[in-house]
Length: 128
Length: 166
Image (cartoon, rainbow over all chains, first blue to last red; front, side, top):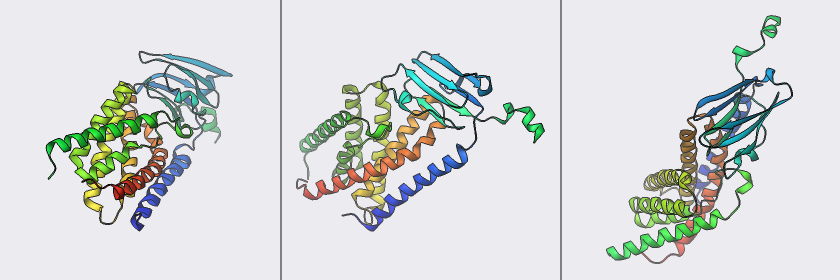
């Protein structure tokens, strides 16, 4: 038998996760990114400033765990090829906002976009 | 009182049922492309096990089942996810059933099991990647866990009302 408490718990869990997702969307993913960080095992493998990328840049990440091909444009980031079996990182949509991530767990790879105020444009700061 | 032999047979039976359910589930395509989102059919076995034989028995069955299924169908990498998820969800379902079974039915037990199983998966993934960023994925998995957990919980409730052997 489904009791009232069951329904309350179900609604509570759903509401909690929707609130968390909205929070992430509006407060964590809101900044526009200015750099791309590629991490393997939690350590920075490579970092690219989006301003330095002319049209697009293909990065091959080859480590002891496997290889991934990452495509960076000046506004988006996606994984186009991977050596892992499930290819979940290739299937995930390109990311465009700061703090969003794409992961490839079998290859211990994390790629994320970062908005770092240290490398933001100096001229803009003076102008405003 | 149940004899030792009957208990042994029932444990093996439950492990076998769980393995079959998990292999059936593995042959499904990933639901709507959400990694980690799955039905968790063997959660039914765990819930029935806890309500019939108690938490320790269920813990033995769940961990043996996940080790055996990972060795048969998955790989060593999927073993950690499966084992941690099974252990954490069985423990929390047992505690929940002890504390709150007068107000909540088996559906809630299923929800708790589903959500904690997914939490354990994110935990293992964040340890593997040595990065905390993957926790932002937890809300998505929590919704999947709540839905699939209530489905498995309701099924477990239906089965346990029909089951006669004790």
